[in-house]
Length: 452
Image (cartoon, rainbow, N blue to C red; front, side):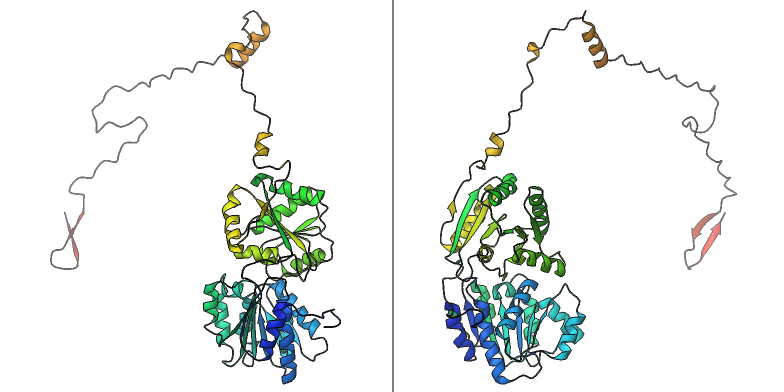
């Protein structure tokens, strides 16, 4: 702790750590960026060290994303540097064999995403029978957004007697009810009103047309000389497209989302953290737990449909006592989303129109389409002008008259069967009645007889 320069605990740490050390279940809610990771990592390291090392998995930390898993495990290594406790990360997108080898050597702490953890369970390469502490980081996302079935299956594999810890920035009521089904008389710690961002984050919204969002973003980055900007979009394809467009505008940018391989995501994120990348365009994969020291700017290129995600997004800045700015580009269709966000936070976000990017300006500044002059204002046609004659000839060239088709001559009438179109072959003559053999079903047996 001294090497990291920590001298005073944050409010969430001051209230959560004693509860964890007492062995109680804990439901902790605090603003993002206030030190929740250390709030559970420090006490669980002390508890496991006091109980001795057994080379079995005694602590399981579940997180929603690979980036958060790597970040939490880095905190475990940093804080437990002088403790004989081994930890590993278990997540998808990478080769599973190195993880299997690490598990065979014995570990005390596993930081995992649910999907890859269940892969190990299916392959019987992980043993969860000795887990003493279960931690759900970003619990609202873990229990919501499709993870609930995996969580229930994993909880069913754990010992009944264990300590359960849940840490998150937001706890909707339905999530609290769900958590109560497998937590035992949990203590509740809330250091601030729920669903509120850190006070050090300055929030502003810029009204702009949807078609001019990219131009406005490039304008803000260039004119304000922003050096490190995290931009959120709704879709993976939109993230790729925006990054490419910013590159063409002279802004160094790259994208990170779920379709990227894990080595690609790790490489791009490292460039951004090392200030080698000016703009990182991301989906909500980066909204949970991504910790970047002193990140100055977060931009909502697209507003999230879930208001709570807005709190997590802008929580990537203003962390650990640092100030930051959250900018939202709001078009006409985004207004209901912004209204829901303001209702959730119980506060208004300042509106600031950027000169030259006023809504509707792009249409007003377009040069009006010149209407065609009235027919009467055209110059009179001069039949003696050779130019007019050539133009008239080109405009209405003489069309060749199609030849009248000649009616075909018919042969003299001859009596015969039914008349038919010319060229159609005559039907074959019908056989005489004596030559036909008709199938008649037998009346009292399964056989058929022939009749003449």
